[in-house]
Length: 445
Image 1 (cartoon, rainbow, N blue to C red):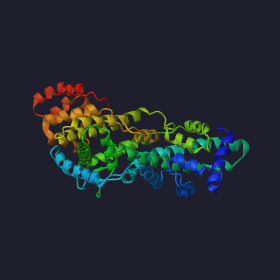
Image 2 (image 1 turned 180 degrees about the vertical axis):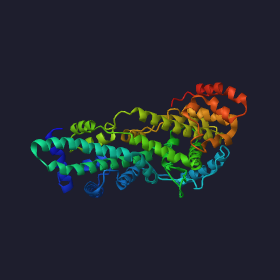
Image 3 (image 1 turned 90 degrees about the vertical axis):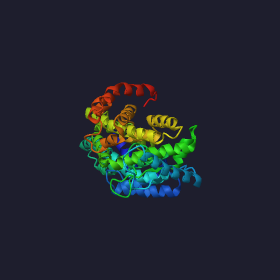
Image 4 (image 1 turned 90 degrees about the horizontal axis):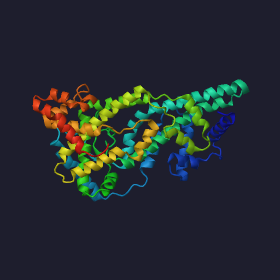
């Protein structure tokens, strides 16, 4: 990196920390996704200066939460009392229908409705846990890269002034990451229709290990608008999915921590190459906040996955596929009274396979995609298990991580059914039945 580029960076930091008028705060706020009104800019300026002067290299929950709340509150469409009442009624009825489709008991927390900002604030702690290792890795690698360059400068020029910029730059990296994470979670709040729509239990209840089932009214109404089926049917189907998802995670208390640990381990395996950081910094204008934001959020600082990470990702995807496949199976049974159930299920599968803009942004920031690749096969496995041994034996498989189906079981379900069923005929017919189900499902995941 050229000496003049370090001078530019040092000057930008000096102006910002000193409150210089040359620092374009409006451009910085626009790049961070914040409203450009004077009051918001003033508050942001104070928050940034405090974070960079006194903060740490990690994620600032306060900054991420404020940004998530601001982004989630934009463009909120109005919901009528009648629509809210209809969604509440759908949750109540769907709970009764799910009772008939699974042996897992009802939730202890009453299902309800959440606004987009409420969901963003409730979900943020989980996203911070997933992304904190990445933010720390980027911050430390950036400091190492600049340290190497400063060492060369000091050796030849004896200029110590750049060293003062290092801690501030490290904290600025964490600050930018915090702001971008908040923006992405706020954007996700416009995409998801329910608390567990991403496939993870992001909304907890009042007690430990509790999970609450919630719908986001604006997004449910928007989703139903794009379909040619009655809005009431869409609400019932989505309510049943959300309740089934929440019940599973509340029943299998090990499941949430199991997935969180796996995702965190995957993230901690990300090692940022100092040379990659140096190249990225050398290619941007340090006074242009839009370029800084792009480098932080587009995934360019995250190197290709290692073999260990690929294996870890495979395990995560298998578990997510098993969860979503079980939810699909239970929801299909619970909503069999709905004539439009199959049509809604197809739209949900297509939507989930494509992913929303918020999920894609999250993948760029954290390096992890939460799209289960084997969902179709996993759903078919759960259907065959249900038909062969019933709901009680099926749901008992979630009692412990050692007995939950594996990737090998998805490939070869006969062995699993042989352990569950004394009916050898059911085992003999599994392969043909499973293949027929997969052949008849033309939806690409």
